[in-house]
Amino acid sequence: MTDGPDHNDFVTEWEHWHHDHERQLASPHGFLAISGLHWLGLEPERFDDVPGVWRRDAKGVEVLLGDGEELVVEGSRVTGHYHFNNVDEHGQRASFGDAMVEVAQRDGDFMIRPRHPDHENRTRYVGTPTYPASTEWVARGTFLPTTNLIPSRLVRALRVWRTFSNHQAKSNSNCWDRLCDSSPSTKNSPMNSHSFSPT
Image (tube, rainbow, N blue to C red; front, side):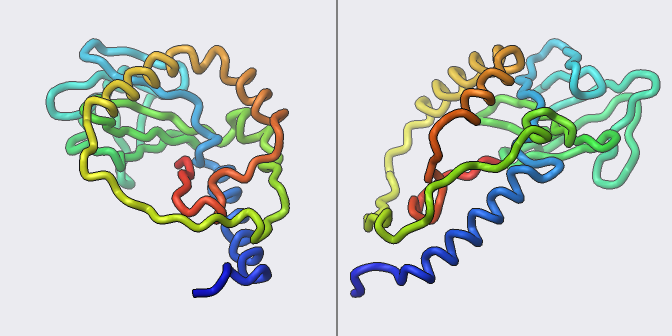
């Protein structure tokens, strides 16, 4: 076993990862284009950043599009009533103009996440500051997957996030300003082999 990765190879790998991560993050429909996270209930509800009136039911998600409103689902133009069936965690996508909406399920609850290329979080984004990659940051470890995942913990976590998301639109810009002003971070890099990248 070697003492550690070759420095030049590590830096090259990290730079490739970071470039790809930044590209996905700031892509027209990437994470920074998300304009809201809307949890759906049984009662129909309209949102400012996506056409239609939305609700969940026992089989999935339905939307009622008004006059002049339409979605494009899997290449087909949709007007009036449309039902998203077999919605899972990977989600389904529909476009409207240059924007799109993600329809997904999280532990039994349904949500929609509109994504707009002109959202200020994306248009103001100038990149994530980072420290120079170095093998000195590498720490060896062993990943042991749990065999006792408790679903109720996920439910509680989702409920906390759901509460937070109700206030997200109001505080979004301020939160982003604080993030932009924060110190450089090395999170989610190859130096953390089990990182999470938002999608």
